[in-house]
Image 1 (spheres, helix red, strand yellow):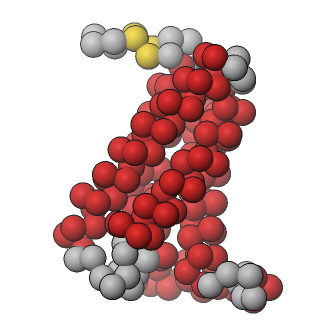
Image 2 (cartoon, rainbow, N blue to C red; image 1 turned 180 degrees about the horizontal axis):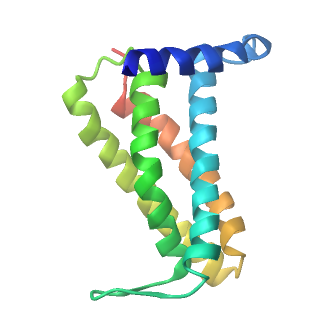
Length: 160
């Protein structure tokens, strides 16, 4: 079942590839397509969580109080983390030399870095520069995507 789903995703993405063939290799195009789709999902979930679930209000937990932009980020992350791993592992970097059992822990290390970058930039953009939370999330995404791509390509799913 996974193989047929991955084949479908490959066929769908690869159909759009010919105009970009001279600009980038197929793997980079697939990363851009999968990462772009997951990023749109992330920003959409962030927007919905921030505006309609949390209503831009602080989230009080037994341990701490979270600002709504950080809570919305965590809510979207719960979904986009497994989606991103699946797409990276099975669609983009399927020829990885890293053993499968080592990929998830390495992916988690990269994701911890991405979480820290998200947290830092959201805090700075919203609380220091007073940006709207969704715009801050979009700006933050540019830094996180660059970090994630190079980390995944040369660390998590490195091709030997």
